[in-house]
Image (cartoon, rainbow, N blue to C red):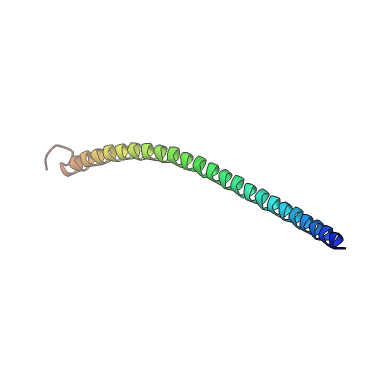
Length: 92
């Protein structure tokens, strides 16, 4: 009789151990999926930062070009204003 009880107890412990291993496996799978998702997000973020850096460089180049055009326009306007104030004949 004592053996039957001990066998039942061991069977129950084995069922419990199996259930706990399955639960741990599910938790590890979920953990692995979470880590994979985090790596994917980091990869996308890195690509976005690289794209923004390239875009910023292009914007900086465009701004330099615009500043050069603005300086030339200001010079031309100054010459135009000076010619208008001279009356077209070189006299103020």
